[in-house]
Length: 140
Image 1 (spheres, rainbow, N blue to C red):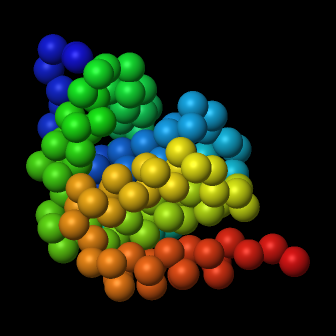
Image 2 (image 1 turned 90 degrees about the vertical axis):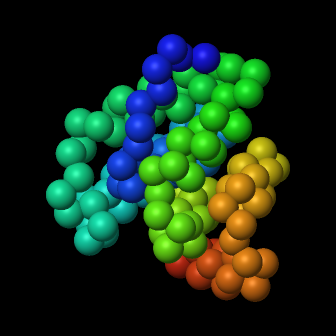
C-alpha cells in the first residue's frame, strides 16, 4: 500500500467513487470517462474543484486496487473525506457512471453493492437512486 495515502476533500471523494466504479472492471470505457468529466464540469458541488487533482485521485485508486486490502483503504479514505450528508450523492454519481455505457457488468454491480454497504445507503433510497440512473441513461 502507498506509504502515505492522501486525505481527500469532499470533491476528491466524489471523484474517487466515480473512478472506482469505472475502473472496477479494469476497463474504463469512454462513456464512463465522459460521464465523470461532464459531472465534474457541470455540478455545482465541483464549481471550485481543481481538475488537475483528478489524475492524482485516479492514480491513488489504481494503486489501491493493486493492494490486498486496497478496497477497504479506499472506502476509509472516502468516508474520511466525505460528509455523511453527501453519501447518497456519491452513490448517485456512482450509479450514473456505471449506467453511462448502457451496460451494467457483474463486477460493476458488485462495486455498487459495496458502495451501498460501505456508505450505509438506505435500501429504499438506493432503489430510487438506481431507478433514476437507469431512466436517465435509457436509449431508443
